[in-house]
Image (tube, rainbow, N blue to C red):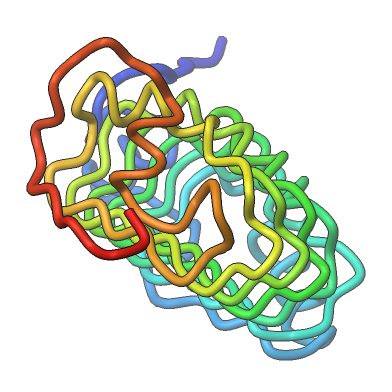
Length: 212
C-alpha cells in the first residue's frame, strides 16, 4: 500500500515533503543548479523520481526541454529560469507550489507560459521580464497566492495581460503589482486594470501620467 499526499497546504503537499519533515527523505534538500546537460543527466540519475525539491532551483542553460522536472510538485526555495530556448514551460506542468520566489528572465524563445497551469502558490515575489516573444499571460489563473511583488517588465511583445485579471480582481498578490516597460495593453497596472473591465474599484495606488 502507498500513502499519497496532494492538494494540501505546505508541509503536507507531497509524499517527499512529509518524508523530509519526518527525517526520512532521500530527495535533494540542497540547491540544484542546471548549467549543462551533464547536470541534467546527474539529476536524472539521482532524483528523477522525486516530487519535491527543498532548496533553490536555477536553470540557466540552452536546454532542449525541462521534462526532467515533470514529477516535481513542490519546490521549497527560489526558482530562477534564465535563457532557456523553449517556447513554453512544459516540464513544470505538475508544479503546484514554490516556497520562495519565481523569476523568469531573458527567455527570448518563450511564447507562452503554458506549463504553469497547476501552479497555485508562490511564497515570495513573481517576476517575468525580458522575454522578447511572450505575447500574453494565459495559463496563470490557477495562482491563488503570490507572497511578494508581482513584476512584469521589459517584454516587448506582451500586449495581452488579460490572463492575470482574476489575480488582480481577487487580490491574490500580497505585495505590489509592478507592470512597466511593456507595449500598449500591458504598459502599466492602471492600463491592465482598465482593460480587465472588472467593475470594481482599484485597491492600489493610481499614478496619472501624460500617457495615461
